Amino acid sequence: MTYEELIKRLDPAVYQSLKRALELGKWPDGRKLSDEQRSICMEAVIYYEDHHNTPMEERVGYLDRGEKAGTACDPSVSRTAGKSSNGTAGSDQYFEVKS
Image (cartoon, rainbow, N blue to C red; front, side, top):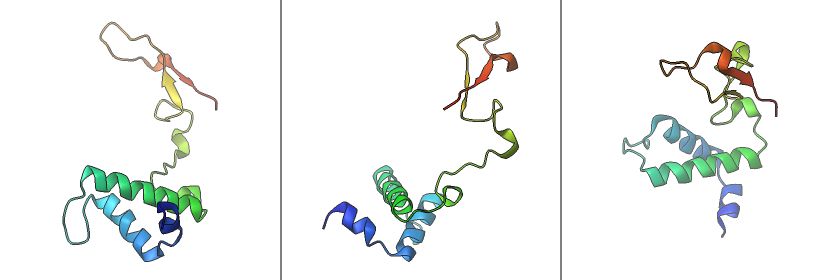
């Protein structure tokens, strides 16, 4: 059985358990997830959500930008290379990136 076949057959309860383990950083029995386990769980959860057409707002990592959309707090907004003399970026140094 391939990894893809395994994920396609993944039980929704197992998916929820993996998702919860990622949220908490530990397994249900309290053991901490290793970096490798976290990576594998994340890959499985993302693939599961994609395969089962989970709505974007219900997916792991979804950020509701709400009123912050288009502001410096929005990840689609980048800073220019310039900085002020004290090393901080001024509010006029941001611009929106259109994708």
